[in-house]
Image 1: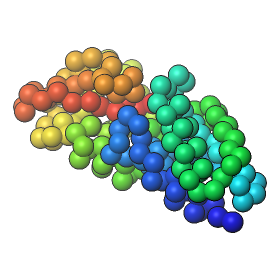
Image 2: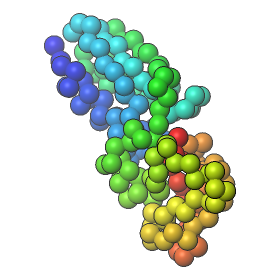
Image 3: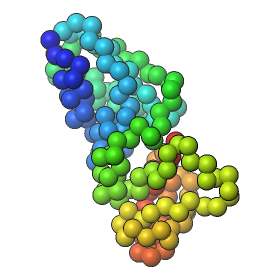
Length: 162
């Protein structure tokens, strides 16, 4: 019988469907694994936000990986409490986002900079300039905002703090 650590390692191979440079494990959506028997398993996932269109693909990818590894009874639990937060992104995932050209969250979810009315100064993932400006509250997906760098003039996504 596989251990929880072995199952976590298998699931850690699954890329995020929207950002394939990071895995769903690095994203932090795999919350709990319960091995019921050699062929029966329960996996708890926490969506990045309610209505995330990638969750169905994540569920399908986890199911496929588990079936490939001998599981025939697979139950999914979707947990919304506690809600997913960008604080769950691993440091490795943040670096991978940066290297891929997506600015990772620069603050924790405790960031209250919006109260000051000053726009966030997001670092450009390409040239590292702070001379950036938000173009749109939504980027390539709802969990990202679209920014443009004033120095290199490149547009880039910023993974919003949630």
